[in-house]
Figure 1 (cartoon, rainbow, N blue to C red):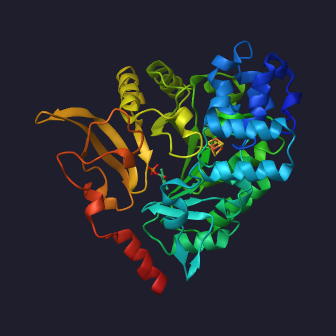
Figure 2: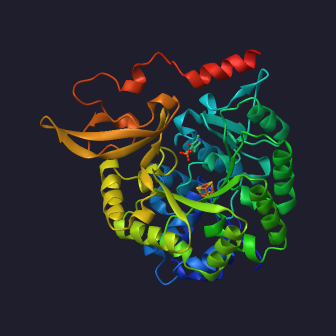
Figure 3: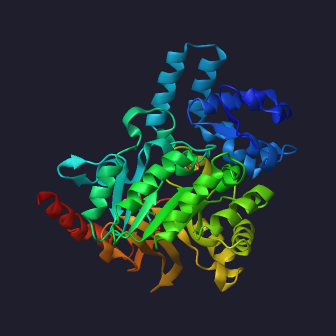
Length: 443
Ligand SMILES: *Cc1c(COP(=O)(O)O)cnc(C)c1O
Ligand code: SF4
């Protein structure tokens, strides 16, 4: 199957696009000028239900909708585009709206970029002790773009908002100097957009460095949902699979961290073939998704997705709360509602699928999970817990927030029982991990 992408420039060439009303096509143009828009022939031919696109979760996953912008922003952009304004004027207005959409949430720019030998290592993030994230510069795009994507600044050309690096030497040097790092997570964008040659260059270098304490290589990817032909019919698919096999043959664990948002994405022949080929390399495939209004805000969707995943040999891993960036107002649910959906879905699958954890916020101090809602001494509270912490000692301690059925993110919650601060806000930034990093950098 030959890959063909559709963006703002050529989406009117999508054969099925005539099924949309004129105002729906205009909305794509307006919203797509602010948020990144890209889809492809697999997605439009095999996943979207063109008989009812407006009610279709797959359609909403790729195609911009009017309501994804705030009404005032939509009117402003629609006006400019409608009157045929200059490109530069449209871009300027789009950038102003983008800057209002919190383009880098959870302090990822400021706090997670490590320093090694006095240099900031752009393209690398290290937040949780065991796991280093690497953003290879050739992987900073995807086969299609999710309308909810929190990495959208990377795709719209907002200069240094891009995390990118071809500095594999720096990466290797950094991991070697950090014996506490057991996992390397290669991410993007989507690293599986890389050609097999480029990908194997990275992997050969990393494996060739022979770092004993690097035990797991993870690949964060949406390619199984967006372009499964990457593993089946793409010309360099056999080379790509061979490189994946080299990782497991080196004695390391290879984990695909696969994004699936809806069971529909698991139903095609192409995705099933791709899963089998990846598993044949010795890899495990773990799955994750945010919980999204208009797309998967239904416990039945989640339980059937987890069941389908288990049947195909995949391991359900995370349910995330949508980040506070981009079109969050369109997709996000209150935390309490996310927990209701999680609980009901979890109750309806066997223990084999209960490897999944959530709903979890990737917030500034860590990955914070809503454990549940309960009553303590007559006060209704939310019980929370960190699954990952900037300080590893924070992990798993339960803590309490006042019940709030509207809050959608950690920073909207108040500590319960009249406390001023959550426990992790009380410490004087004593972060053993960070201290260690500073010491090593001084050597
Ligand atoms: C989620 C995440 C990881 C990986 O966490 P696991 O719980 O080990 O899967 C690593 N780094 C960052 C910044 C993350 O957000
Ligand atoms: S696949 Fe991931 S990085 Fe790419 S657009 Fe979707 S959410 Fe964003």
